[in-house]
Image (cartoon, rainbow, N blue to C red; front, side, top):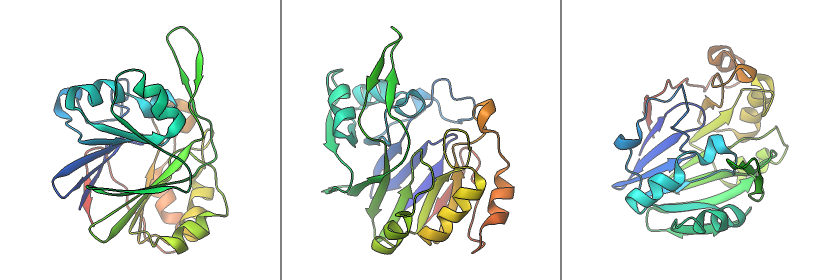
Length: 226
């Protein structure tokens, strides 16, 4: 399974001939290496409804007939825009033909800001567990530190975890390092940093904080095989 990082919280998984794209914030993302015309997802998974995570979901899903998976409130909103969706909710899992997806809790917000200056409620924010080929990937979404990360790691041994480190809106490096300790993932990759001025961080310093020395910085476009 090939997993690549593309700036902010954009993660791409290639597994059994399918391309799964998480939080496709491409347009307006100064850190991503992706171009809209070069991305062809079969599946899009969203952690929550903020604009910098929903990103280009509607355009990509319509162009490639991609299935969009997210919490049920967010998928309802997206389905009204003509997108093919599968709604889920926290604690629920579903076995798709491309892998198993389970949504976990995350502590954050989830409102989509429209051009008319309206905020659309998009349900509870979530983390994402993706399981296939005998491997488990955890994308924490935007979240603060919470003690049930210990249970997530115990219930689903994690091969690769993407954790936000930007602070201000999510966990900062110190809390994310403690989250890594709770999760006991084999490899930890930082995300959600340096995109905007309030979330500027040094990912190398975060890696140095990890008790198990199991971190890896992926620059936009870099990948890891698990």
